[in-house]
Length: 196
Image 1 (cartoon, helix red, strand yellow):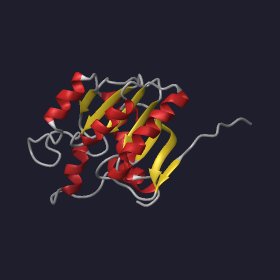
Image 2 (cartoon, rainbow, N blue to C red):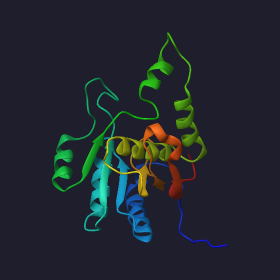
Image 3 (cartoon, rainbow, N blue to C red):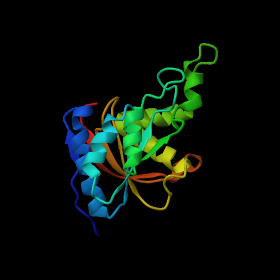
Image 4 (cartoon, rainbow, N blue to C red):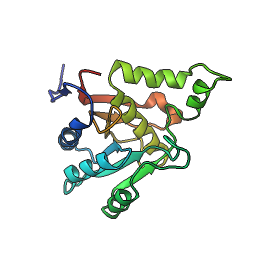
């Protein structure tokens, strides 16, 4: 029997205070595994800035996945246009796509006329509750990036997400497209909050 020993980090609580550590852990694990891509969720651009600073000069490709336009308010993109311009100028890729684990399904579950949950929302809720909110976010970002053609599905990536703000979960994922969701594999949890 063979095995590999690697560090796993547990934060006392979730939240943006863990973001800089997550960026460091992402870089560390990417180096250990010889991976080339780090994917991170960022709503306003602040988390993207922290990750960019931590990964600069590492040779790693940073892909930032943002909320869709209209996520919090119709017609509004929450990501800072100034930050987007700066990051794009530095070679960072920014992806905005429909949230795979909610999207249209959320409209039905919130509706007074239709109501009820869906299998898609059940998957999202399981990822949130069994591991961490950030795992759901990280997995969703990988699906969005694959569906947009920004990443392939052959090579593992480091994926990072958070609980409402910042980053507090880091994992290693073998990607898939959303249409082949069950091919996706979370292969390692690098960091996560213990208290959710």
